[in-house]
Image (cartoon, rainbow, N blue to C red; front, side, top):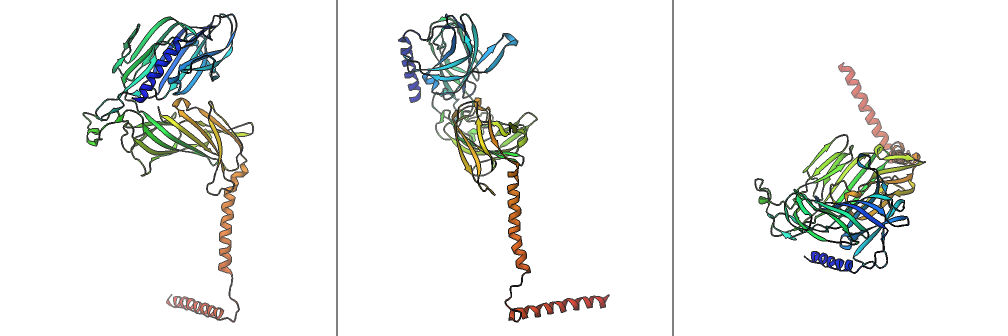
Length: 495
């Protein structure tokens, strides 16, 4: 309850700050139409906004400002803004626009501002349509925070029916998509209604700057609140034709914590299933030609997994060794191989690895993701291209037959969601001569081993031909020769 109380306090302070805001600093633009859609069918709250922007001022504008309440922006995992052109079926989205956090003077700290660079200055009377996609983690709070094995899993979402914006909004609407139609309660406002598993607010007309109408939705969620507290992905490149991916998961269930004891008998009671708050399986979508797949933990291989593969994807359905209730943890490893030709390409005298950054697990939240790209020994002039900001460092890894070690590119990012599962490119230079280093080392090793053995078996290490050892050897050779001759003579007589 402490976290929920903190959010309520922040909300009250936000409302107070909005009421005392001075003359708006952003008055040249007007939002003629705003459509917001919030999807909470999983543990991640995905917000999609369509903003139709009109320049009502006399000067051209090259930047647009987005705002979020602080208690939401603290959990902002992913944000992208794109520019749309055309109408209907001819409508098309252009490349993502540059977005950076802003700190305008005189604005309250309880509101976060983001500056969006427009593709071209917006002149007087011109219009522009922006598509905003944002993903938030940890905004669906379990309520109650502790439940028994028999209880359903209820969560709570806090938002605003009106769009918080530094611009005047002429018309706006909001729809919230829930996992199912079981709604415990929701804030009822003017022009609000429920249609199946969807709650709709609006349309609301002529909203002033920084309008805010807090709402709370309390509903059932059967989604897996699977959070990887730490995930290490090791991607090892071998120019002999394979890319080996190994993923180490430190997983926890962040839903409502289990109250009381766990009963395996009740959990396996199929006619009356219990433990609906626990997740039974996780789904990973691997590249289509993934091979040599394994799934194990510290005890050993886990057989509760299924795999389906076709020309477009490979789906791995895994089930933990035990069901995971709220607060429970598990550790496991997934590994698979990929064909090198599908991910390694050449460009301008360099090779580059084009591979996904995030986890293949569906709807998994990763608090700390570490991606280690292990390049072949001899790689140099290394550079990395990512579609978002990451922390980058370099290491050296030693393996069998390595002399100087293999260069490792280490990429780190916090609060990672499936939206971050985009392609990254690792560029490097590599000479094919380096491919011969390991075979030459093996050949040299065999020569170093066997040549002394041959010399030893064929050399005579006796000190003198008159020594007792040498005479004994001659006598033994003579006896051995006589025995062989006698045997051959007997065989001839028998014949």
